[in-house]
Amino acid sequence: MGTSALAPITTRADLIAFAARLDGVAEIGFDTEFHAEHTYWPKVMLLQFSTPDELVLIDPLATEVKASLGGFLELIKMRQQTIIGHALGHDLGIFFRLNGGLPIKVFDTQIAAAFLGYERPVSLGGLLQDCLGVCVDKLYSRADWGKRPLPPAQLEYAADDVRHLFPLVESLRTELTKLGRLTWVDEECQRALDPTIYHPSEPAEAWRRVSRKPAPGSRAHTVLVAIAAERERIGLETDRAPRKLLPDEVVVDLARRAPTTLADLDADTRRRPAPNLKKYGDRWLEAIHVGLESPIIASSELELMSPDTQAACDLGKVVLHWALRRANIAPWLFEDMDQRIHEMALNRPADMQQMQERLGISGWRSSVVLSPLWEVLGNGSSLRIETVGLGLQVAWPFG
Image (cartoon, rainbow, N blue to C red):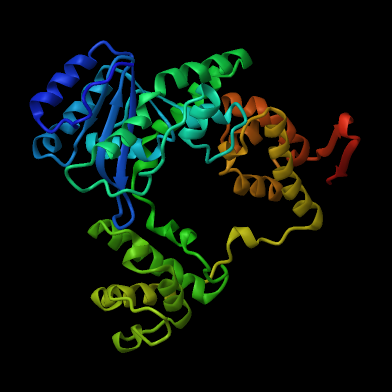
């Protein structure tokens, strides 16, 4: 790949010229450098683009560029150009917030690697080493991307994230085609283009991300749910990372103490001060009041199970991993499935069609895991796995 000079684009005229050069290009390499430690939304600091013939960096902090980035990304979307990149989740989130929409098609090399058995997190550097024998420097992985001007070595580091994408994608597609899985990857990559993924988190679900929280079914838990929801709302309003706004340990402390006055709110029960306790004191107290008045409802995760039902649930998770390992597909693609398997064990589906609908799977996912899961979780099913080569046989009847 030929490369342009690595001085980032900082003017509208240069951005328009680059957009013109992209006309007719089918696929575009894409990556971003951002800071996400202190803000609700990641703050983009640099954008990297590549084609088979060119590598370009764009400075989103430059005044002329900042005003034109949304329109530039809109052109990519309107031209239906495919975005290729590695672990595109945050990058697509930035694309969405800059543009208000998403590209039409993506090819994520991390997802592609999962269909070749690579676990997550598989780094771009690891894939480049395995597939191309290319070694890239990761010296600046924790660098400050907000300073200007960026040092040449740091710009080279950023460029490496898109410099080798096209030969890497070609290598991955060759291996996936041999296995007949290229369409599976395309199908999975399209799941990343659901715009709801990039909407703000639901405040009512924020409690799930709090560490060391009180157990569901307790009064402290209902208070925590309300405080975590309010913290999420304030974080979104002020563009502050919720945990920076109020640390988890403070949220849990408030949930357990449930203070009802401003004087009691900042009691001396923690090692470190929390200045935002007083700043938003009235809102924390209102949230605590809501939590104290809310009914205590045990989480569905704590529903009592018979021993057979619990065994079916546990074995369902084992069989899911077994089916994926047998197919040499990384299980992280199904990391959201545990709760659905739990629900299947509590309320068995009548047939495979109902199971498929309730698991929310289709396409390649159904072809790989539906039949094995039916053997465990189907109405009246039993499990019998035989692995002759290992001399392993597991059988369990479920009534």
